Image (tube, rainbow, N blue to C red; front, side, top):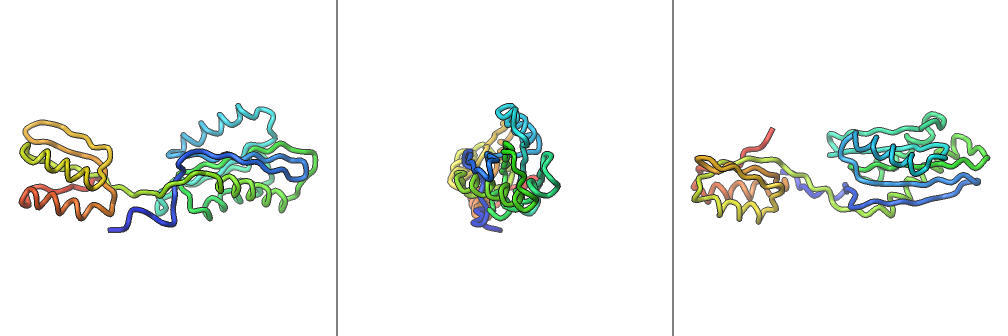
Length: 207
């Protein structure tokens, strides 16, 4: 299976902010984690509350994983294609996913022109991402497995050894275990469980 630590992709491990000034206009960038489109709207609303006098609050977001990503952006009243699109291009180039970047502009009285706006929004986004703490993106696979009680302790110990996340257990005639495993651990963990159970138990991939 594919290595789950995508060396070319990262996710935020915190939040970041930066600011630049271009011909008296001030641009303030914010970056943070988002996992769903609803997170984006909530974050933008909060940003507007922090900057009620701002001329524009533009944004770009990218929610992974890379092969099935959801992306979006907004110029928020700036000329079409001068803010959100260049911001999104910078985000894509950074190889960061599950991230929202917002850039607040306070107009300084001097128009920057189309090219100037593209450069300013792109630069503010770039600087914000440069100071954003990151961590590797880990791809996980959801699973279930059904076990007799006498194997429960040994299997849970094996799952923990392979980095299981969100482990859940249901007890009935047998024990139903579910959770998420790092993708690169799947084959080794499944083989270990089959060996422990002498081929009677294994991992079933969710979905």
